Image (cartoon, rainbow over all chains, first blue to last red):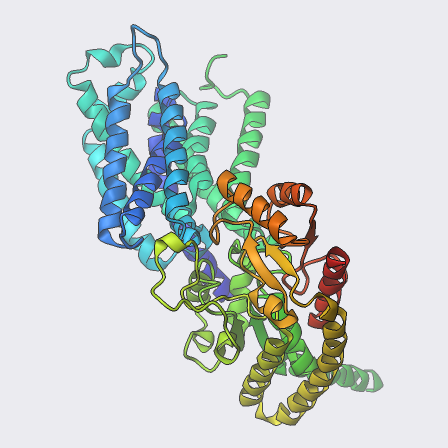
Length: 280
Length: 304
């Protein structure tokens, strides 16, 4: 049994770390209404990795890592430059979708030219939370703590931009594009590392579901964060346990647990209308 | 008093049974074919489980928690090697924290060491060649002679780990050799009329099989190993197959049948689903010998 606990411990810790940063970033992403921005940035990072590989670099080399980071920064710049365009009314989700589709297709083209070891490439881009190594968990915890600190220091600025996104208040904030660029760069950095640990589906769930669930019950950012973190922690534990009990692939089990938990919370919201419930 | 005696007797029976179960050598294999061959040699003295099931592509395996538990408890791990499992086995092995079955330890058996390997690249592998395994073609178990070589390596390893049972393993190996030799005569006779027949395979996974039965692989549905069929390659392949009067396309059940099916229709050839591993079909592939029986009977229908 103690062995089982030691097998469960690292995936669970990884789940907590992902919850910590993503439930927070998720509040921003949902407020801004850029739900699929993480998929898009992860895909750009993947394209960067593929291009580095095509250029003859080893998959696990530092050079490859910087290629992928460089592509992510370009993506961040694109998203910072294309806030809702008032004259044409092109929604930012459209740009995000286009960037996703084009970078995914470009990666397919690149891979068809350099197919050797596509299984390694796939493996590198889509991590598996079950086999996460203690070393990865620790370095990721340190990195995310630094990103978290950065966001904590500038929290008022970032929150003002995110919350003001629908009301156009954000436009009046000085250097809004620069702050947006910082936001998307740090976000892309986090998402890229997370995807290599846990895979795209799981990262998306950690980002969006806690934040959406919290919106069922509260308006206040602080409360929403608390609800999101609690939910993420509980779902991580429940999902990992279920995956061991039923012997199912761990990542996909956690994603489905998130889905079930959200439905349960929505039912709670219907039957026990909480005082802080968002208006219809 | 009587009751206590009975309970005592029952308990000792249970303990005895447990001790025997615990004494079984726990073997984990990456593919089901090795599990089948290990059962042939190890009989009831081993407990063998395969990670990749026969219906799965052994290049890609989705890690599940039970694999960690299996590996943690294993006394022996048998792998294909030649980097076939590189995408999924190393992290599982790391996480299992079982040092007895790490590469280089007595509990690790890379079966590629004692068999004949085809397609060893003569020059350095480069990226333009596709997903080539730089150490040679890993699909070596699809050759009855290699199967015997694999069984011999397994017998030696089992005898090393359980010296007391060595005579038992040797006896079982001999028995298996007799049966596969018998079957092998039948297989060679079945295939004799089709020596030199030209075939196309989806992936380059049948070179050992083709060489053994004298089949001539003239092309692949994949333009390069691991790359899905492209339009121009498919067009060239169709022309080439018509010119060479190719009668059969061999494909594993886990690849997408659309392109090979349409190629078969345009060239008047037959698409044959060939099971690459024990356990690949719902029935009829329960062990190594029945796997070959089924594959050969399907193939002969197409070549006729």
